[in-house]
Length: 273
Image (cartoon, rainbow, N blue to C red):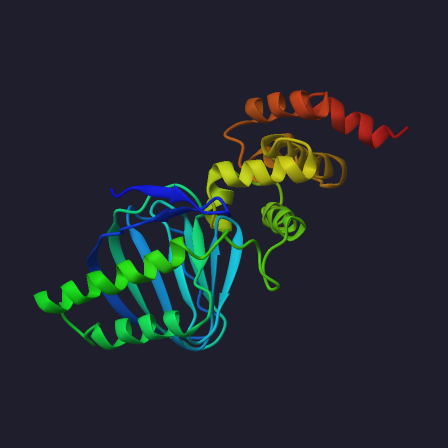
């Protein structure tokens, strides 16, 4: 890798960046289509030709209208939401740029980004593999786009249509509430949120002052308490409804989180203060 220096915003600037085109695709998506969260070991470049999409990367929302260009680093979980019928092109490529730093970056609007996006769109064939000479040209254009992203200054925070920390946590709460006491894993939540486990746990603790696992246990305990108090179900039926493997495991969970076994908790709740 070539020599790098620090810019005033703290972003590494690459004097030389080499890129290797892997593959590209053209897509058309209907309004409301959502993709599953995923990641891959190479760079991704999204260029919106028409319509609008939102990329959810590490819990942050990047809104892209026609002409929007977004870079996503390797190994970063992300998903897409198409707010209108959308046409786009997507490139996957390897690069010599450093792997650390921001997870995703929307290129600043301007003539340079516009020219690069138009050239990439024209070079990518409608179908089939690009010719060897075309791949060389694509390598150069992708390197120019990546340099533009690396030199764009400090990575942007959530935009005016983005996800604030409060909204981020509210989305976590909504997802947990929708499970109605069924088991929720941090890994599963991170997948639905389109971010890493570490980012999800860090954001939640920073905002709420408690570990996410403690919150998940408390919400499941509340669901158990409601059923024990108000539902005309046997203990084993409640354990099954909440997806515990057996009544014994459910009883241990109640003792740990509610301070009493299910039968004792139910008797106390029905007896009242």
